[in-house]
Image (cartoon, rainbow, N blue to C red; front, side, top):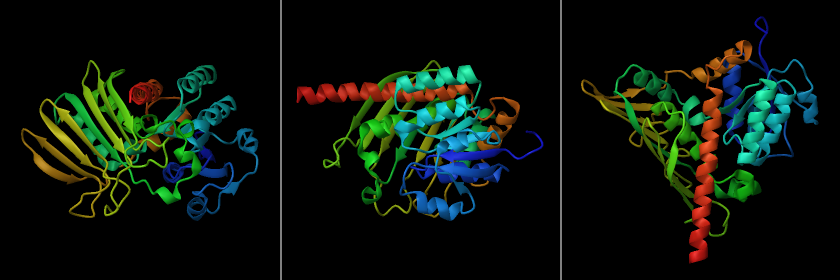
Length: 344
């Protein structure tokens, strides 16, 4: 493999995150050879414009049985991702899946068993960390000790609903997994990573539907509080991005340390068109830094991990733990919401 390009294929195009997954792997020299998807998802036109020369196959088994394919990208309906990932690993492929990587603890347990039995890589592209250059710079600064020991993260994940364009599965809880399982897995990943936590206790988890009564299974608000031996975390996610904002959401992350703090304005800064703005405040610096050129090491690291069977992109245990906590938070929030409904 060291002398030939890494080859990858895609199974499922139901989420636009497939665009970034594929483009970033191509940017590090991987070859996109084929793809399969179930039906004609709304993302298909955009996909064909971006990747016009890639072959569509009618039967996913053709991809699974191709020994030249090293990596499978998955952005299918969330409920279907685990089965596709397991099939890929059982056919000798490594996997990069869109978040959420699965929608139930049973699915996660099956994935863990498959990783153990096959020795393959199951990696989730947490795009709010791995596809955001200012997070790369923040990681470097934290590792350099620029803000001391990290004791808390506050992650905000607002999203634009775009109600008329959403497919039917988007409004079915069992299909998308719930807002904490889905969106908040990004912020759980960042909490564990920046605090250096191996595990955490969920001290608060709640969900609600405040603005979409015509879609009762949609959760448009969610929050989580986390606590570990290393630090604390608070997460808020929602589908309330206002129309005037020029992008899909004002995603932010604040990293509090014992000697300073970092704030990331990832996708928009409301007084300019800039993205990837990093605010650093410590004992000697108080500045805003444009971090758009900081790089995205995850994709090259994953390519190298596939070649060398290493874990430089993301430890497998970390990937499992993020989804475990997201699923536990979702289950806790669901139980509390059901109690509240019965009590009303």
